[in-house]
Amino acid sequence: MNLPDHVQIREVGPRDGLQNEPEVIATADKIALIDCLSASGLSRIEVTSFVRADVIPQLADAAEVLGGVTRRNGVDFGVLIPNRRGLEDALRLRDRFDEVSVFLSASQTHNQKNVNRTIEQSLDDLTDVVADAGAEGLRCVAVIATSFGCPYEGRVAPEAVFSVAERLAQAGCVEIGFGDTTGMANPAQVAEFFRAAPDRLPNVQLTAHFHNTRGQGPANVLAALQAGCRSFESSFGELGGCPVPPGSTGNVATEDVVSMLHEMGVDTGIDLDALVACSRKAQETLGRPLGSHVLRAGPVVWNG
Picture 1: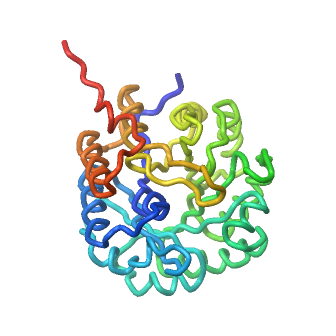
Picture 2 (picture 1 turned 90 degrees about the vertical axis):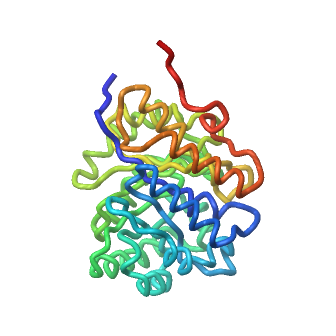
């Protein structure tokens, strides 16, 4: 197997996970969960998003959360930015985070339903946002949703995804994440995609973002890993999903990915027991069982 010694995990649960919860989580609870995660060995955490409170009320306290979390050496905090107004709001707390993420979809229909814009309109706006964020010394990340399939349009051609990614790279994004937003990807498709991606995006960090909607999340992680991907996004506890369309359940669980990688000898720098404790804390906070397999069964323990 073509496996590396180390991969990077970017935790997106505090933003991507909690924004999909039906109720609003108390600010103090969010801060406690993020502080737990930042003490687990994770080096990158997407903390929140500066979006309109009437659109995503679960993240209306972005400034309070960002201002209240503990900053630790070696842990970079990121925020998701939907538009210029979001960037302006975030920059009031510039010393509290290290990178920004922008997002759009690779399929027209999903982008229209998700942000009420065409892909070209999104690219025009985000190009300016990335330029302004870069001028502030912020690391810029782009995430392309529906990179492997769209629930409205079906299969999305890799060429369409790479075309969007190239525009974002030219704008100044140094990392691009490819999202399996509604869990439609399969391992063969993923392997082919990540074998081709470096030729199209030679100087960009390539990141995989899988959902476990149909149980193929870990298999897709392995396929991407074997195809050369060395960076992954995931969500502790398997929190999250996609609000469009209904039924799109959680991201692949961070602890499930970390457990699998560690068992194969691939280091992540993360303390798995500490990470599971964070998911247990999230489960207690939310008052319901979470989908993570390792949270239910516990890490593998070898005797003898």
